Amino acid sequence: MTGTAPTVRELIAAPHPDIAPLPPAARPEPGVRVLRGVPYAEAEGSRPPELDAWLPEEGVPGPVPLVLFVHGGAWRRGRRDDMGTRTRDWDPGPFARIAAAGLAVACVDYRLSGEAVFPAPLDDLRAALRWLTLRSAELGIDTGRTVVWGESAGGHLASLLALTPGPTVPAPVGAVIWYGPSDLTAARGAFDPHDPRTPEALLLGAAPAGCPERARDASPVAHAHAGAPPFLLVHGDADTMVSCTHSEALAGALEAAGARAELRRVPGADHGWYGAADDQVADVFTESLRFARRVVA
Image 1 (spheres, one colour):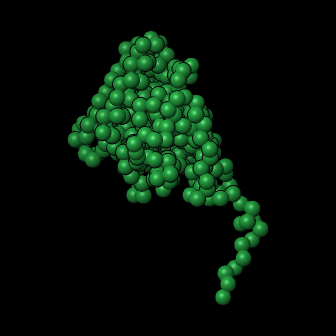
Image 2 (image 1 turned 45 degrees about the vertical axis):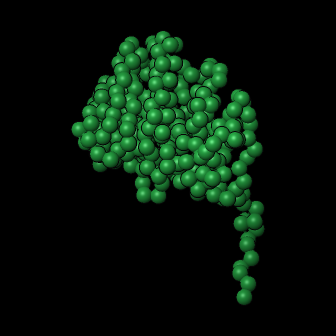
């Protein structure tokens, strides 16, 4: 007996991301390779989500630890290769610096709130970590030593991935969270959980007060547990968009559960490190990278 011949639709389809060849590497900096626009999943009726992989140059003893970076943008916009406005003019850029320090970086797409509501973006991060694990030998990475690093809305999603990785992916061993929301259930700063127009409401598909169970599921503070990985939470104490109390609350919840959390407040800094001096921003990055290297050692 012979199997059924593939249809024309099947023949012309692009290879599934699980088996598709990796793209050729660019070398933007000495000692650093970048694979750009690599699909990591198929999404029915939607574009395939992609990631950029920043890797130490071939020949570095491996496999190397991984930083999974999650961009911000109020869950509504943003680019996977953007660590925020204060790092955009760095040369070399932040991801090249991390790779040069001996850690791989995966900058990951996720569905924005105009495409799908929660938990879709968290599911995408889990899918990316699954793909990275599947292709880890080719990439020379060890996803058993993954640090999630996110800023703003990406910090919220990175926190959730660290606390609720799911059963099919390696649990992250650390989390670096810059000014991320941690509680979508209660009023904090300018946030009103009854307002259906907020970025949080657009993420959830309804005002948080109108869907309390979903809002709780999407709140990292609700998932703190003793087995959580170490967290570094960094937040400006003058943040007008995401109150510093979000990081304070998550640090407190983690410590109360018996997990490790380091909280650093940046004096005078607003959201995205506005108002902070250049040397303060550089110090935050250096401390974050030092933390990541420590937890994967």
